Image (cartoon, rainbow, N blue to C red; front, side, top):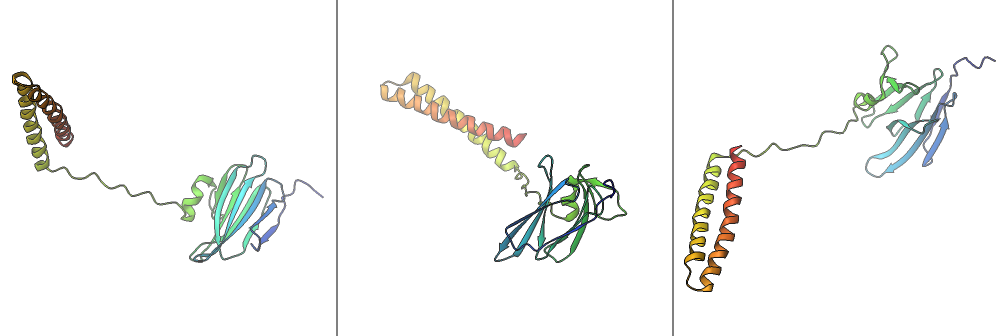
Length: 195
């Protein structure tokens, strides 16, 4: 018997157990089938193709309420048939050594990183809300408040210098500190709206 001849085989996984494993006939790919029972969505069977030498997960896809069929049309190739949530059957071939796949035999092989998008399993991008519109009126309000705070800072400084009692001087210092913080806060908001 010629060992160089490509091996052909078929595996059917019933998915009765929580985990079933098998090895491709050429020994290059380990197949793991995980069963998950969901009360709302029914039974999901996750098929993983793992490089036997490195342990790298090549493919991890879900099969919905169906037996998982895997074929080995030639050495180094695993053909996978899956059913998605809508009941549509998806077939693709994976070439483990080159980390490539193709959906149809007429197609050229593509990088495995593109497989999820071809199967329609790409997670949607998170929504990022656009920055809030900055109104001109809010900018004018910030500028007026900054100028008013500056007036109170000057008044507090005058109280610190001209105050006759310690209470007046401490009150002036508190006014300088408080309204100084208000001034810088309003000024930074105004600059942020302006840019």
